[in-house]
Length: 183
Image (cartoon, rainbow, N blue to C red; front, side, top):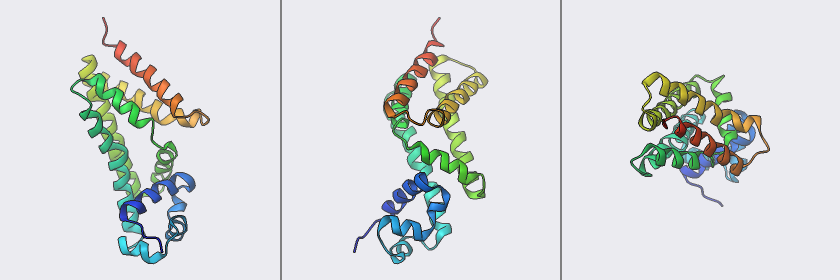
């Protein structure tokens, strides 16, 4: 019999969410996907609610907080951080991002986590804009909103584009933003 860890359950959940949306997070669907019994699920999680809470926290950490930490480790300057963040975010499964938003439309808990993630991401981008371009707080936040809108919308607008396309567009956007600080 296959054994899977708590981390495996969370990664399975994110993959399942990206493939089937929130409905794919039913215990029976997750067990089928993982090739294990319900007992394995209940060994790690008390119930569906606890799993959902933990999955949302895992998504917040792996798709936001860990990326920001990695970007910060890339160097002191905003440009190095921006490039590292772009490289990391281009690897994210944007289907998961879209399904988290769909989930949040009908679930209070998901809505709270999504709002916290959106604010953290916007705050970080605004911080980079202030550092790199010397912008005032409002302008830095407005530019962050534009950057974030591109990040969220591009995969939906161009679903056949791949990671290379997303990275190319991201690099162009980085150059445009960096150009704002030039005289």
